[in-house]
Image (cartoon, rainbow, N blue to C red; front, side, top):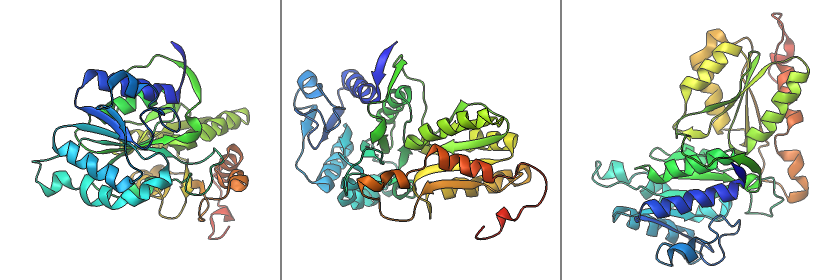
Length: 334
């Protein structure tokens, strides 16, 4: 095991996939000679040649359209959108063609491609450079949506995504690109399989991607107050691991879901609904959410007021009812 950053782990996953399978190709804006804005594709063009890793014009819809054609022709494209909000011009291609190709052709054709999206905030990016767009993709049947929170999962999940026979939107938390861990890069993480990152008995925290880090800090801080918090890292938003989530909540009886995106109609709302449907008789308190606010992503100097933090998560933990008596905190508007 050696100290490895998430960017290096993703680079290793791409390198190994290119080495193992001649049908894998990597392309996008500045992924070739530059090695990508975040250096995730550093050295790949030099190692594998301009036919396997290459730059494209600045036209996201063209990148995805080209990827669909290559996937139909037997390749496994891995494309980079460079920044999350840059991907929106390609959204029609993703929804109308990438997600529907297998269904439209009754299984004759598929789209085994990966759309890599540098994702979410925490880097002080200017407008159009930070967004939390997971709900758009998760709401689109036909897409798998994955987001790693650790260096090890970044490698394992990207290898799984490239091998998957269906399209995968791979959301890479930008602020974690240069997080570092001593890990052995190997296969292991599975799409559709959540991970209990920290075991506990009193309350379940559920998070994914960039929200896992503050949730872990909150779990450790809560432990100092005598609250044993379990943390579930979803890893995969679609498909969703109901079994791991419900088992945790049925054990603890209390749950907080954390996401960076605005709360209204977000993935956290879907998770809360699923828990209520499956765990209602096990709940000792309502399922709470800690989310970004329902505003456009803020300017860099205001970012720290917007993002879910350890303190905001602990506030939600404190709101949970720690006895069996009625409490007006659950009244509307409380």
